[in-house]
Length: 250
Image 1 (cartoon, rainbow, N blue to C red):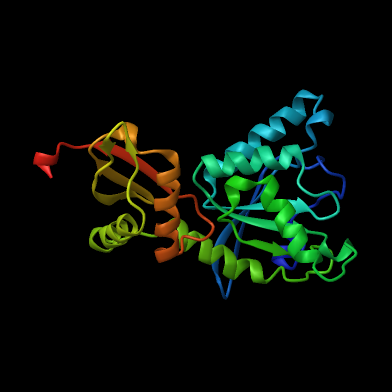
Image 2 (image 1 turned 90 degrees about the vertical axis):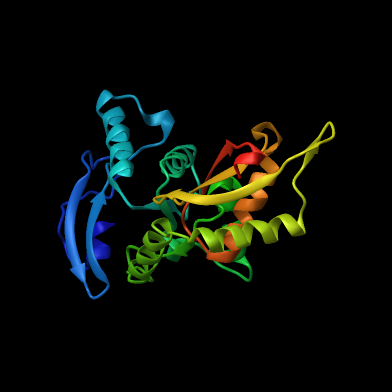
């Protein structure tokens, strides 16, 4: 795969899944920018992981995720999302990395009207936590749409590193509260005082409230969706940290 992205042979590889054992770093520069491409060790399906060396390949893949800014989640179009794919995708999500879902071997799939949209739905159904990740269909064999990956990688890296001003963030939060009131429990209503961005990679926001227990997951998801609607944040997880604050201190 890395050879097709680079447009030249930089590494010696095999077509057999799982035979590349080490993560290989390749420095590369083109008109889109400078990159270090990490070609991870091939990961086989869980049922085939028997040798200790294969377990080390998985460990190296996880270490590569930690080092990366953007992870290209490779899906074999002829196989669909495997359990191992889902596990690795989950690790990238939990690590807060930018993620692009790359469906390879798209040229090998028989197509009819609606095939692409149906395939997208099936992938997102399997990877529900990656609903924010853009999806691109390529063929490493023919090079189809491979060059578009660089624009997408740059975009997702920028989104993952985005910083939002406190004033604009609180405008979005206040508008969200006006549209959908915070939840109540046993007569007590959640009060949201204000929010601020704590960090990037991924964008992480601290929300100050009167009672953390009233901040239900459903309302957190609603606020995240409103923040995404305003700022985009395509291809990156968004994290919310909830902190209690006395009203007199606000």
